[in-house]
Length: 531
Image (tube, rainbow, N blue to C red; front, side, top):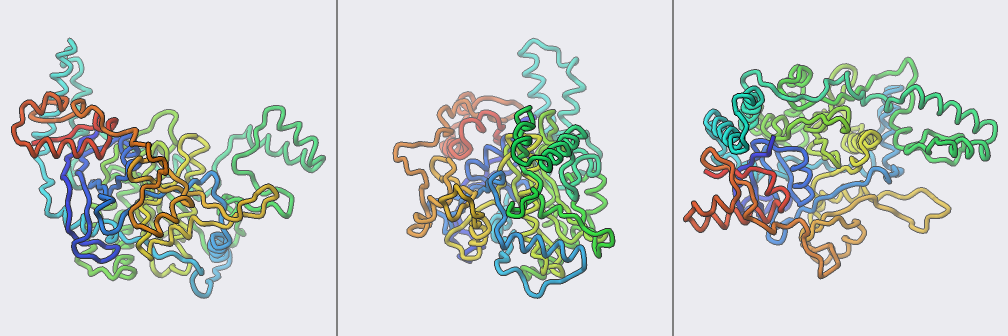
């Protein structure tokens, strides 16, 4: 199934939630009727970001507050002292019901949805994003049939597949909740897949090897253990706590530390696909929405009419991403999910995430303000980093955690820098006193640059090209715009054919602008809807 997008062009002169400028925000956007996870992965690696089904890209050299895509490298991540305090605070609360006095000293200010998309939300409401679903679906079906005929295949033989595809397209072209049953691919239901409240499951064979290794360590910690590893047992990527007292605990050790049988509270983390076809998502929707309203009103002082069910559904429960379950992908599949934190049988926090081919992308977090003392912003981010590491063990290329945008010129966004700027543990071979397992995306060449190489430039200018090679260019740029795929008048065609039918010069400018922003690969895979 191809991505179907409707480019809305450049919008300038609207409100910025970061600096409160009334007319300083500048971005380009498109409405994603449907989108594959690979296309979205490639787009966020070019500076795009989604809010619901609206996908936008700041115009970095024009907007008042440049927004740099930031990612963490979980495989090298080591929790700092403040991170450990947050995790231990949660364990004490669960075990004994202890409530710490005051917040964690570096508790971050939560990013607000308004900060990210306030202007975009107002803009979306003005856009004509409605379309005739039946007509567009039939048009796509007719186009596919036409392509099959050209290939010399009988469309009648392919009819069942096309009908399912047509229904799938029709659902994805809507802007709200589907109103009738549809044939969709859903991720495995929570409980059948990974249990996020427990350590990653290991096979019996691995457990036996682990026991043998521990036994050998007790007998001869140096020699015999080395011999055992040489026989084919690789060192664990995230090793359990060793017997040595000076061995630092891993993130997993801190998160999954055992609780007493008579613990005061029980915390369960559930991964729920964002789909109204999923029974668990549907059954928890009302409670999740109530939590969202409570959070928005208490933390961000939103009036009730600005945090209604329509806004909640559009931005946090409506995703263009197609759920995919390839054989070598994570057990939960790819797509959009709500990571629900259940305390004693009720939801106290929800992390909205996208699981993509190379990363876990954090979209938003809302939580119960009554539990602010647990530093749920930091705690959930640490859990998501740990979750990324867990997914990596099955799917090796999935190894990054995207935290959205970093705005250096905005003081309240500095928490992302503080979060990633962790003190390294004392290491005999480590000459570096601090290490920051994070990168920023260069807005011109779209390569990742370690954050320590970017900070000095950002202190001097809010807009920077991070790639220091003056000869470097955007390798993924649009080089052959005529190969861009257009969906127009019931047909899919390359732009080279489409442009011969157009006489409006502004049409060419818009299509070429779109091609330049999404890059050559996406422009050839995604279908650009033109009326």
